[in-house]
Image (tube, rainbow, N blue to C red; front, side, top):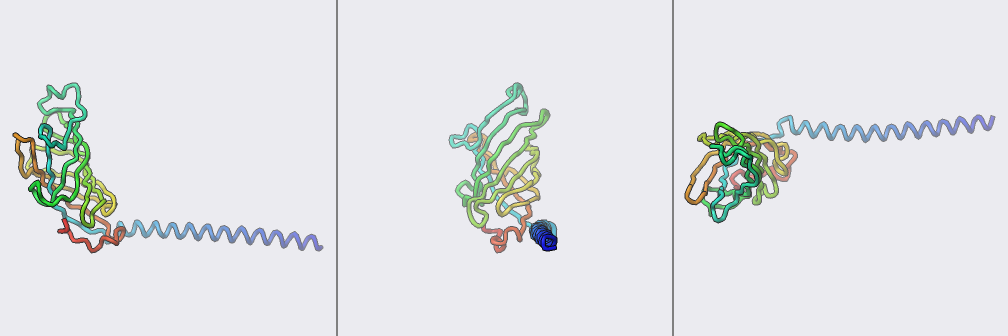
Length: 212
């Protein structure tokens, strides 16, 4: 009888431990799930805000003594193509608050452009705005899309970002502010309409858009 009681006690102890472990695990899972649900609620429910940025890109093309754009690859037909089809360029252009070259620098725009249309000047863009001043410092904003450069205004999608612009989406309007063919120097205007999540970036809630 004593052995039976002892065995029953052991079984009850093991069962209790198993139930307790399961409850703790379920509790952890429930906490993680709640955090995840809150994360997505913040994104979907009224936590996003819209920002408008007006910036200028100092585009020093190939041939400029201080060029920040370089050709890194081309196709077999690039030299004979009227639209330089297959030409790939890498760039690291200065971004400024105003159109003048000596305007306040606010970052760089870095990435690749590819002449990807056989019948017109259509360029595939893969660009990252990297901000270096103000409360946007260290954040990036990514733009990806097709740029029909002969149009007066070119619309490009904003596809994401980092830091302040995590989960960003929107679009940018690119225009040619000025161009000097003798010095291979162009100034490009970008008006960017993008979302940002105020809850994910609480430390930036008080940002002034005109900080740029």
